[in-house]
Image (cartoon, rainbow, N blue to C red; front, side, top):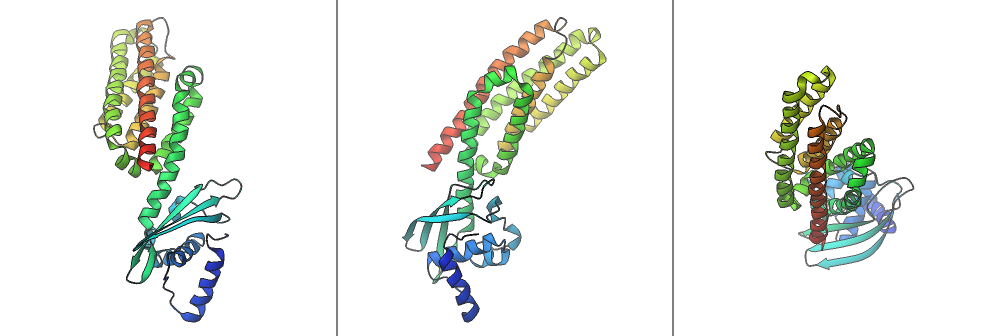
Amino acid sequence: MKMFFSRLAALLLIVAAFGGCFEPKTPQEAAAAFWKAVEQNDAGDAVRYSTLEDEAAFDAFGHVWEGAEATVEQVLIEGRRAQIVSRISAPEGRELPATVTTYLVQRDETWFVDYERTAEGLRGNALSALFSELTKFTRELTGQLSATSDDLQQQLGTMRQQMDAYAETLNRQMSDSIERYGSVLREQIDALGASARDALDEHGEQLTPQEQQTLNDVAGEMEHQSDTLSEPDADNVTEGTEKALEAQGMLLQLDEKTLERYKAQWIEWREQFEKEAKAFFDTLDAELRKAKE
């Protein structure tokens, strides 16, 4: 890896070799030593040059940095705190943050990378990219639901994996919006589950065993998701959205003639559900942008 401070990093290795224990005296020295440890996946030195206390907690910020290049754009030192902003050039085929802000603190006369603050900043960069995709997705949600339900489910599954990775940050930054949407989502899920249960009770004898099973499965899954949403968070509201859309798609594949009245309900439900989901994702995007200002 070409280091953020490549020449300085090389110098630090010489100093360490001939002078024994190296203690960074400037933010640039601390950042260089720390990122050298990160690119080598050296948890011991990552702890040594940062505020991280447990090697087991070292995660390289969820990225592989080998082969990345960076250019320092800004160094800001304010008393015992500092920030170093670098622009990142990732190797072909690998996704890395476009910029990295390394946050540092001074203890006694030695500078250390503030691991949690730096990690938080990196999560923010990743979240910004994620929500840009979510915003784009929600704008196309209605058409995609009607035309390609399989593709939609695949996209939702991918999004849920991405949101899972940043669930802690989402829950902290967007808790009010998540709670509001979770409440609305639970009502929507309850309505869909109750409709499936009513359709089974009313027309069960006219349906095939497979169709009966589908209605029963949908009702049971919606009841489970409703229970999960008693305490909404980033993970379960995203999963609930995915499962609700999947259930609605299953219902619309059932017998057209026998369940005509219920199918009209499910189509109406879908329209309202799309509206609520889009509003939620758009609100999250707006709140994230505001939080970053």
